[in-house]
Amino acid sequence: MITPSDRYTHGHHESVLRSHTWRTAENSAGFLLPYLRHGHSVLDVGCGPGTITIDIARRVAPGDVTGIDRSLEVIELARRGATDSGVANLSFEVGDVYALDFADSTFDVVYAHQVLQHLSDPIRALREMRRVLVSGGLVAVRDADYGKFAWAPRASVRERWLELYHEITRRNGAEADAGRYLAEWVRSAGFEQLTYATSIWRFHTAEERAWWGGLWAERVLKSEFARQGLEFGLTTAAELQEISGTFVTMAEDPDAEFVVEHGEVLAHRVLGPENDEGDVSGSAGGEVGIEDEPDELAERIDH
Ligand SMILES: C[S@@+](CC[C@H](N)C(=O)[O-])C[C@H]1O[C@@H](n2cnc3c(N)ncnc32)[C@H](O)[C@@H]1O
Image 1 (cartoon, rainbow, N blue to C red):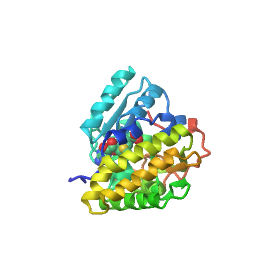
Image 2 (image 1 turned 30 degrees about the vertical axis):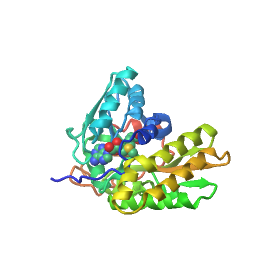
Image 3 (image 1 turned 120 degrees about the horizontal axis):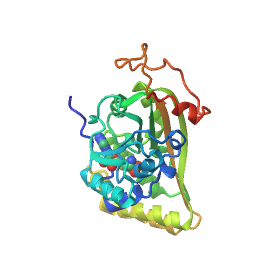
Image 4 (image 1 turned 90 degrees about the vertical axis):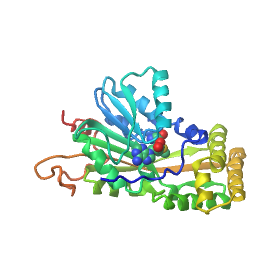
């Protein structure tokens, strides 16, 4: 079966990786952490440079953790990071979420952070993630919702940046507002016992503004975002310069803030007589509210 060859909007320029390598299990997988147990096997799909993956591996040791990403360049970076970290219970492989190179029912937990928003067929990707989960296994997905980003002070040029971002991702067949659609996608892929929440990253202190504003000031000029915007005829070099300037201004303004809202979903693969492999219609187990205890959910993973 032919898998989609989606075009990734950000690419892996250093200014993009500066953002991805800042990520930790705490700031990017907090909703999953209460459910992880020593001995769990975990797959991190679209792991990028792997900083979150390494953190997860520390938490589930001696369980095996695997990070996969379509980009060899970023997988090589992740492997170097793993070696430097001294964490041994993990490996990084090149792989495609649409065609995972693992047998059915391999992992206790499958996690994907900021990945589904870049795919033209996120439900198909989620079905493939479901296939490699054990019965009772947990999927954990988190994606930004660009349409819900907020900032102060008002800046019309930054509004234009957001519009341009939506235009470019739309050309790539991707959904920049993925956060708000995660529950629907996860349910459509056949998962059950779903919990949905939102969480934010907020950049406000001088250090945070300098970091976030600085990296975006560079991304809009040097990353794939810039290349694609120009290639698609959606922007000009002069406009990108102007957008870059608005992020420099943010870094310098002590009253400025930038808020990135995310959607995050946890759900189970439930296998049973009324919900076997072929049936992805869902609903046999009913929903589990977010008030459910982590122990209770973690123990549903059948070993
Ligand atoms: C925004 S980055 C997120 C990286 C990491 N999860 C993090 O949060 O730091 C998205 C990653 O998904 C990868 N990716 C895109 N399409 C993919 C696919 N079809 N299969 C596997 N990885 C993919 C990209 O190469 C990129 O490294």
